[in-house]
Length: 427
Image: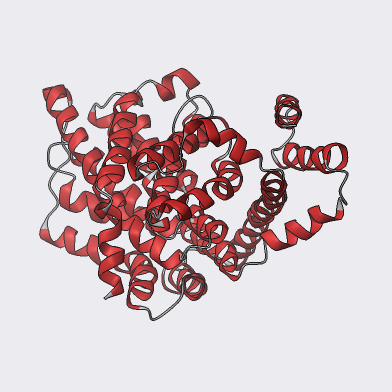
């Protein structure tokens, strides 16, 4: 049965069908041929999959992020960071890294971060003398932090699938996101030192220029404060924070900056509707597929050789990280999330591992997979916007992958990196 389902999915993928088709066909084959069950259960499970209230936050965060990505937010955040660190050694790559982190707290999307930050910072970095392979690898991998820093669509979906608090996941993602940004910045510094005189520095900004940059960035910085601060203090739920974020984005970009017109907002709404439809259809059919393989106890058979029952927390986390990482290398991360999460949730519950820690670990693997060959989605986004060949785009990714792998190991052996702020918020 398992062999037949896998073959059907692989064949359809090679025929270039979108992932929702292989999932639906595999579920139908299982129900009709192997179980002789009523196919109407697929519709029931799809409705169940998209029914949780927490999913309301998904289109709202996407809408808010799209509005701010079309406006002045990225420019203003970049201007602030560059004004304070741009003149120092490795100032420009560190500016790109921190800007990706801050913009990730606005967009929650790695691909939006690659586009918004990459288009601005790449010409500056190349002009300063940095190699293009380093520049593209930096932008692709620093954008991964957007998966960890709230708002994170991946965390919302994981929280829904694993019945885990989205608010706690948001808070827990901040620590690893900040640590990862610092680790990337340290690498950028040593890389710049090794390049020596080949790297030019930008002029130091005056006090007046820094104050002007800070004033311009105050409003974009208010976005993460609204989300994280509201959830951290318990003033709002993640869904309420998502609705406020849309209003905040509209006021900032349309009323204060006056950058966007009504047609821009309508275009953003249309784009949000299309993305949301794709995500929700995928979540729905993924729920049906996950229900079927659970009904047939396929995951138990596949995981039995790994001896996870009674295993240590570190071993279970390692297996989870490995499975999600490998899956996200070849398939869209949301697809992997929908398929694998229901498989590992019972194991996590039985072992007593904090589900919030697992959620952060899974989100990190989704981020790594999105920037890792052969099929990381951020790689192809960079190919499209930078107009560079595949091999050139991935040439400089190895050091960043090593840092991301180290971050995974740190989460496994030092879970407090993720859980400290969450536990602090509980008091």
